[in-house]
Length: 462
Image 1 (tube, rainbow, N blue to C red):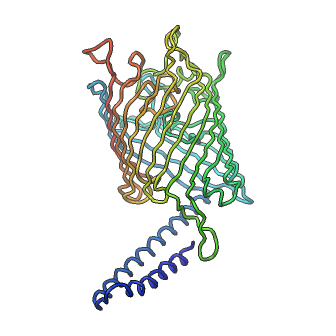
Image 2: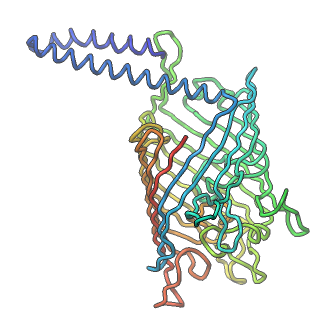
Image 3: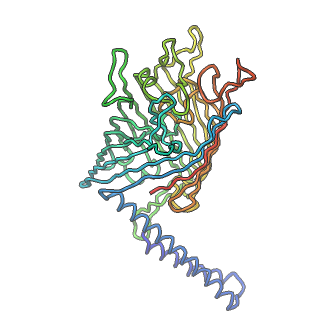
């Protein structure tokens, strides 16, 4: 429904409501009528302004998406505190920078060609190895230049909004949180997406907003020039796929005064499901070339030769339920389960394999923080055994061999500035293995390995 039609409907409702209310209500004085008319005019003016703002924002987004060159990025400042077994590990300010350019190089006959290029701050771990999942850095000392690197360079070709293929280095295209792939980690290779819902009609898409199959193939990012070198033992490659299904059973078709189907969402419930399978090879090369972030060593189980003991064939189930879907502030509950089918026993002769993991959470707020005072608050519980995933790829605050709670809050304090804070209380899932949480000096043989982490900060997007 366009702007003129919406304003006409609102005015018509106001005119019809006035005589009906007058028939049932006692006569009002001229002063009360004038006051009520002033309130109605103020409400009508506010509605008109909101519709105008929405139309301008929509036009700006559409123009930006079709432009050849668009600059984007963010600058962030944060304070990061980590306490392990009541011992302060670090207490410091951090910063982050993302600076990118994207655009549409070609769009015609339902074909579209886009590119994306981005620079970001990069870090090295305690052993001097690069950490592709870590973009927050401590403030550099005087005369020390922060490190920058290209973490994203890709070309995407889309056909009729049904099929798309992306080549280069790109962020994870899969649904889910950061238990499997950190948001800062980028694949290097190819990814394809087949949108089956776009091939169906509008009525089908209302009930099934997304029905898609995504597959990705790539070499793993390692600390060498060019592509990683294969060895006789392994190929440093990744192959994965995910099937995604969204279901909104209470969505109904509605038509405007012009007879066209409206695009407004009217169902307050949606269920989403994603099933994935991910295969890795070359794990020993990853462990010897990539850093693990804030830890001194990998959290996977190591064999006597110091290499990662397990291979990785990870199956996943991700599901979420969205309530108040038609409102700006939504309620979302999710569960992400992971299982490594190729995990090996930690000790020969035992059945324990450290192959399982999951996270479950609940949040309330806006899915995208775009306006001032938009917010999102959430809490989650996670439990990741040591060999469930490759820790060099998942969240730098998790790695593996960890369990605990996290609480998050984000608020859009200015039109382009977001303040955030999160608190984590964790402990090692298996204290015999590496992970967050230093040993308790009072109990050197068996300690809980607890850690407490706080991060507060803000970032400016452009």
